[in-house]
Length: 485
Ligand code: GLN
Image 1 (cartoon, rainbow, N blue to C red):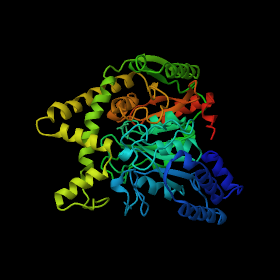
Image 2: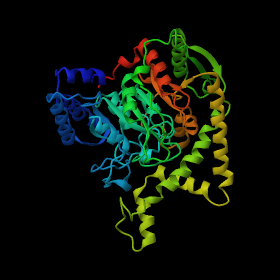
Image 3: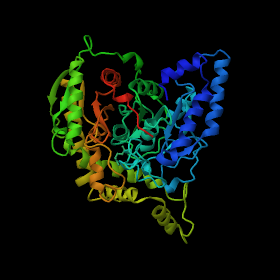
């Protein structure tokens, strides 16, 4: 599918109608999704009805915004009023939210058209989308491989042209890592920039919603539409939102000479040599574009993973306590008393990975272990944040690979959770520090699988990040290559 700006022009020039554009996406889903499994539900009738409303506006000579009539995928952990929101969990299989998340409401107000809810790892816990209770999403570049996770459905849908852009959520890398595996752009904004109201909570101090798109420009447009203060989210930042599109310029020279730091610790052991090569080459291109490059050390970066796997499960165990079979969602039918009902509902409703995290989190928060684990992890979190602060006082943007490898085969890591956790090695520290970061395609391996480069910015440095990413994208052609489907 064309880009948001191209589609917008076609609509305004009356070359195509919104109904035709939405139908194109729906046809693509119809044709491909039995193979890819990107979507948990497709909202075709509603989408076409909304497209007709956009067409009516155009016919009436009303002005429309950039997102009007644009088909979009929504990760199924974002509440959509009247439409099932399952979090890819059995425990929410029949949950129809009575309210709308702030981000989806903002998109609807902008005229964007949701074509369906996308697959994810159950409650966003995972790195391959294999933890979904319903289906396994395939990577459009090689259907034997995973699309990454947890926003694997959104990433695969965008890469396969089943929609123009999509929303994902990122707690430890769930937007950036699947973007990297699927050869698209994925951005995690600064913690608090985008309202989390209506995002089903996984680990509240880390979760952020963000865009997945084929180009930096599309990502900027989507971010613009969802960013901003929201009274309904107590952690929402009340700040002025810059014009992200205006930040995109074809070169970094000469005015915006940006200093970029290579995170030393992310290179070397454990990094696939082909990924290292591609990212190194990409850094050279950034330099040619006018960036000043230096190597920077974040010595505590490597403690990110163990720290995250204390903090995230702790928060998850508290957040997931609400699924008890009483208030909403699945209830086990066979229990004889209340306690049994709680136990059986949770035993039958949650998958193995979710249970693993609830158990770890309950343990790390329990009396006697709290200080040794949870409190300690919070202290290390502060140290990691300080490392970033020090690095980002010397440079404006940090660069490293998004993931240590390209997409792995389905089933390859399911039996070994630790090796699965390692795929988020480079994305997780960013969430612990609350910083913005994006992944942008920077090459392909010898099997034709995409490689991603991660750019990390200062707090609220989204415009600068997008500027650097855009200049790189315009100087390369990675984003033009498409998977053969
Ligand atoms: N893969 C990480 C996890 O399983 C990150 C997931 C996410 O960002 N939602 O926790």
